[in-house]
Image 1 (tube, rainbow, N blue to C red):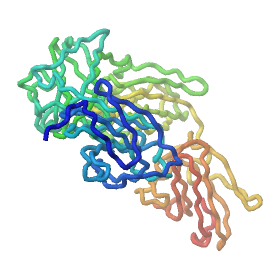
Image 2: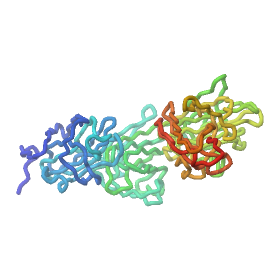
Image 3: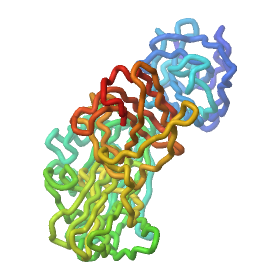
Image 4: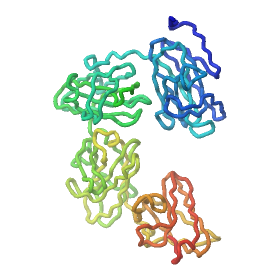
Amino acid sequence: MTSPPPDAPTAITCKLPHKVLTLSGGAAVVSSKVEPTEHTSEINFTSCTKRHVYGVDHIYAVRVQLGATYRVTLTPGEGYDVSVYVFTDCDQAAKSCVAGADDNFGAVAESTTFRAIKPVYFIAVDSLYPAGYILSSGSYTLSLRRLAAPTNDACSKATQLTLKAGKAEASGDTALAADDVSLGAAGCTGYSSPGPDVFYSVALDGGKEYAVTLSPGPSFDSMLYTFAGCGTAQATCAGGYDNLGTGEAETIRIKPKVSATYTIAVDSFDAEASGAFKLLVRETRPPINDTCASATTLSLPVDAAIVTGDTSFAGHSVALPATGCTGAQTRGPDAFHAVKLTAGKHYLINLVPGPGYNAALYLINGCGGACAAGADAALLGLSEQISFTPPATGTYVIGVGSRYPVSDPLGSGKYTLIVQQWMPLPHDTCHAPKKLSWSKGVAAASGDTFVATNQVSFSSAKGCSATRGAGPDLFYSVDLTAGKSYRVTVTPKLKVDLAAYVFTSCGAEDLRRRGRRRRRGRRRDIAGQAGDLRPPRHRR
């Protein structure tokens, strides 16, 4: 049987409610919205997205060109977690599903490709979440684009990039590419590269510094590396990175000793992984406070000194050991600030990292001096805090670094540094709690842990608040009557992640009894009987 030509008026038959997409120049785009009040879910099955789909589905039909390859991209609006899949038979969507994607959590785009072997295909906008659930509805944009085979599918056919005003940009798609260069697991990314790859070449000047950033499309688990010669990629690899996960950007930094032409490869750890991407090559300059010797000087006003910075293109100069004052090795780019501190006074140093930056904070007694204090919470984007009382007046150096190496995007980024003098609160220690007084059956107080320090931590996350309690803490005591029941309520004024617990003795390492952790400003209660605790009857 002869297949109809691409533009043949093939009838679209589908019993399900659907709309027709019309391709123009090989592409089509449509925007719409799944309303919270919609409850029509025509298709429910474990789809070729490798997940269940229970949500309200919008179905589109499209006539395509036989033999062509198409990319489908579904971009959701805020608060909508989408799935997208492609099938050929409305009556048997599950069996005829040929491609799909649900690789990301939350309002993140999904993308997939398919090769047309039939004249008509159906595309479903769907969700893992049933109607009425959070993340189950919202606006979206669906795009369909016919792909062309890349001209830079081989290293020998690399597309030439030319830096203008210090940068060069390109975009592409590896969907129809083959695997031309395969790095071994011992290659400069630390992973093998059997995926389809495309190539670019660029001339770089010796002595200058450059950053190459690959921004993959949704559902594309990409890999980035650069080398000096097509036949010697493994041996001449000058830098590479493979950020685990789909849609995650990769950045490598290059500092050629002599002027040379480098080849840049966009590849993948997965032989089946492909996707659209954007590539940026730019000349970079390190910040002026890139070394301890060039630390910028902070002046402490009456309230606080606030300064912003960026370690994105900084070098690595101070390596604290894993047993050092931050509790972890510092291997990432670092920047430095010098500040004069007075003996006997108390100071708080807060570091607020930007999104995607896992920072470390430390204080050293001059360049080459010992580390006086440090903090590294080991959580992405979490603020770090040091409280410090100088034993002697002098100039100290504040270091902003990371446990992640220069090659890891998590190891650098923008930050805000706040240095201020403070007076310790009297109830900042367990042994000097603030006494609560009863009035009409209520004992209440307000406070602020911002200028508090950490005095009590549990040995594990199995403490009574189900957390280690490693943050700044304040303490209160209250007289309770045995046999009566009490409820303790703590309400944060801001979106902070707090923990609350009740105990009877400051001396016990495990301060057990009752506790509750509260996330992002939510009010939580602790309930119990005073008789549970035995004398003494002072709960703190």
